[in-house]
Length: 460
Image (cartoon, rainbow, N blue to C red):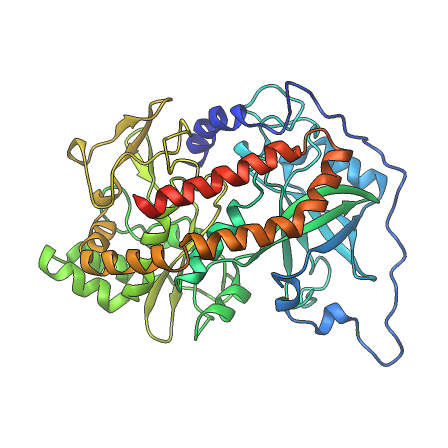
């Protein structure tokens, strides 16, 4: 399924790759810079990164600079094969303190690498790095499993190569959070690699056990990535299939009893009892708010797009969290790279969702849609999603609250202006150094387009 989605996304990504005007950006394979010597704290004191909280890293009023340092051999190793997503050892320096060693790798999928690797065979992303920026993951607990950086074990720097506004992640997750939906925190940052300024990145919070502990009363439960409670036949999966998607508690003899029972009760409910099952297992205001935001920003590459291949259909780009204290299930959004772009028109040839909220077509069989005729199935053919659409009064009320509150022009445009002022100089600096960074004209036009899309969403 993932491979199928990746192949579909290639065609779109190729249209908006990080190369400008057909130009290939050469990357120096062996920069003459290596890891710096680690500094030491004052006697009797700890490093600030050891005692600091994550709120400092995700302070919306700051534009932090992070510096990565690798040996020429290690940088060459990951640059020569980014798609391997292999960690190498390096250092992270932040505000004069060096964390060493850390694991450093590139991250992404087929869509993240198309146009940025030397091998022209898009179906097999391989070869050396040709774009200035690629998304990166930093493993703080590289050698010491207990070591944290301002309370974090991993940092994720998103390159935003498909988003010339450099705002989608930050705006999208902010809108989810503003409506009470737990979602990653995002801020912009500057990234320097072996002494060279790489550009503006989005620092996106990792969804892991620390995230669940911070966002839920009991954050010790199971976290699953990209496994829906029901399969495309409307049945529960085997327990092992759920456990294969588990991202927390893997070493604690876990059980998937909660998500499996939740799914089974959805399967067993008749139409009159479906709402009651959802009310039992979910925070209705939270999940309907999720749907309101998701549909307003047209997060069409997310949990409500059921991609199909060979008769099997499934959504992606989401997590599920099961709260063991009150036995509730929570849907968490993830990966908003392709959000917003289909608001005014279906500009992405692969991702558009064909149906409005609650609508179905083709007797719930897969059908082709979009410029590239990709197969999908109506989301409301899934019994759980169909159950959410029954809360029409709540949906209308929360939609009105969203449009007159967080999505209102006065609120969201002010934030976009504030964040754009924050990264303006860094964006100019990136363009001066790298020809594949957005120009001022491209960046400002993309931000205006984002505002236009949000205006359309408010009025439609």
